[in-house]
Length: 174
Image (cartoon, rainbow, N blue to C red; front, side, top):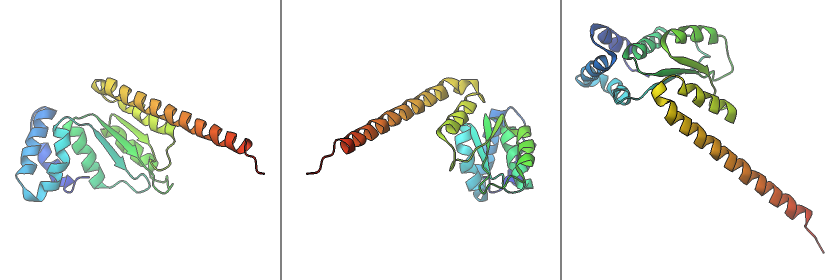
């Protein structure tokens, strides 16, 4: 996350132009101030065309600093998805997060990387394909590679299990 989201947002609101121009201006501004070094580093991949996956802990309440970060990401105009990870199965704040994220992101998903099944991981990648048409082919190739890898792992596991079962069933002790 941003180290100085309030300051970055205030500066961004002063700037004029399209999203690429705003991003370039913001990059120059953060590069010019040593205390914004971390924020500058955070923006570099985005200035090179990267999209944003914004991960939040849905088990904690929404704060003003979160709103500032989301608004920065909205204003810079890059493709963006929000991922809500409720770390401790506390869903008390989930609805407020969802409502706020809808205002700022192309897509948002509830996803726990520690507990996600293979199918849920594929669903997340499929959802990423929808946030920017230019990414569709690349992400489709990635999803295909994951599916092929999963099928290969499943085949190897099945072959290993069959081999072990065969060894056990054919075992003779004299």
